[in-house]
Figure (tube, rainbow, N blue to C red):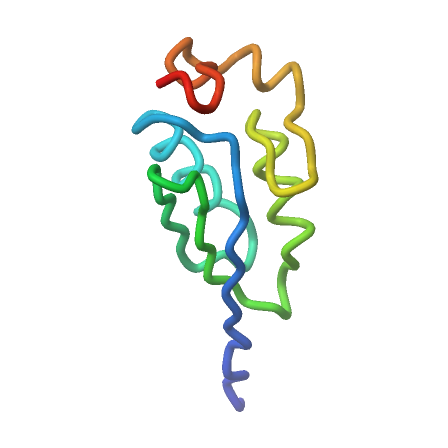
Amino acid sequence: AFAQSAQMDTVTIHTSAVCGTCKRTLEKDLSFEKGVKSSVLDLNTSDIKVVYDSRKTTPDKIRQRISHVGYDADNVKRDPKSFNRLPACCKEEEGHH
């Protein structure tokens, strides 16, 4: 059998993440998204850089996943129910750390 070489792409998504707990939550959750190889959240910018297999997922699916965890992802608004389940430290408004 011929191994298909993975079509690796990278997308950077701006999130509403504010703290180390957000970072752990998002990076852990995205590791379960089909096709996602790695994700690194930069807390200084709230941007998450995601390396993914473009044959298995898309930036839009990744944004939806982030939204379902309770965070904004670019223009995709966070899911309110998921946001309510986040720890208090993750609910600090941006700029009020």
